[in-house]
Amino acid sequence: MAAEAEKETILTRQGLKKLEDELEHLKTVKRKEVAARIKLSKEFGDLSENAEYEDAKNEQAFVEGRILQLELMLRNARVIDNHDAPADRVIVGSKVKLKDLASGEEIAYMIVGSAEADPDHDKISNESPVGKALLGKRKGETFEVTVPVGKLRYSVLQINQ
Image (cartoon, rainbow, N blue to C red):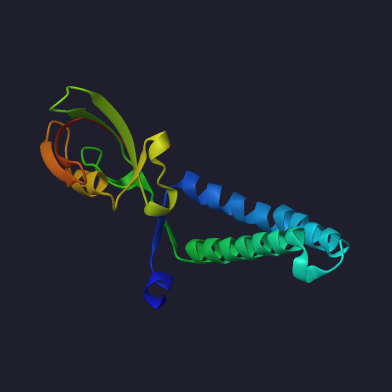
C-alpha cells in the first residue's frame, strides 16, 4: 500500500475537474444523504437485525473510502499540459486515429492516465498494452502490440494534441 500511496496520478485538465467535482459531491451531498439514512434506520429499532442500518453503514464506509482515495489521487496529481508537446508524437492527452491492419477498421482513442481511463468512451490508459505501445509513435508508423486476445497490428493515421 505504501508504494501505491506514492504513485503519481496523471490527469488531463478535464480528468482533474471530474475528480474534483466527484470529491466535492461526496463531501457535501453524499455524506449528508448517508448520515440521514443511518439516522432514519436507527429509528427502526434493534440494530443487530436491522438490514437498512447495515446497508447504510456499508455505504458510509464506501463513501469515506472513496473520499480518501480521491484526496490521495488529487494530492499526487500531475496535470498533463500539451501546449509545449511535440505535435507529431503520441503522448498522454493525445487523440489518435488508428487503422487495424487485420480488419481495416478505423479506431479513435484518447490516451489518458489510468485514473481517468474509460474504454466505453474511447479513453485508454497510458499503462494499457495499446496505450503503452502508442506512446511516442508518429503519424504513419505501424506497430504491433500483444493483448490478451493475441497480437494486433495498427497504423497511426492521425494525432491531435
